Length: 101
Image 1: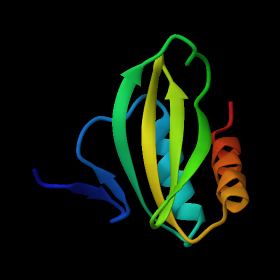
Image 2: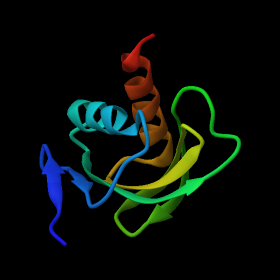
Image 3: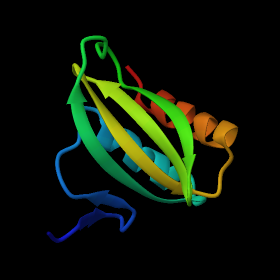
Image 4: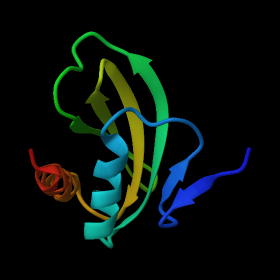
């Protein structure tokens, strides 16, 4: 399977849940410390309603794992970055705020 890329940093092997792709593109555009984002498994959940929410969960070898919630689903996001957990959470908050109403 061949990887398609957006800006060379957003790796897309399969679908991304609604609203998450523009958020990740804003995160990548505004933060040179974020090297790449690889979306992972999508699972259906009952409590993922309303606007997109992202929660940074655990460290990985080269960054952080995060969970995005939107449209009745959750998706794992593997974010390759040199940012600390607090720094990444702030960058994600800023990217969410840029989406506007």
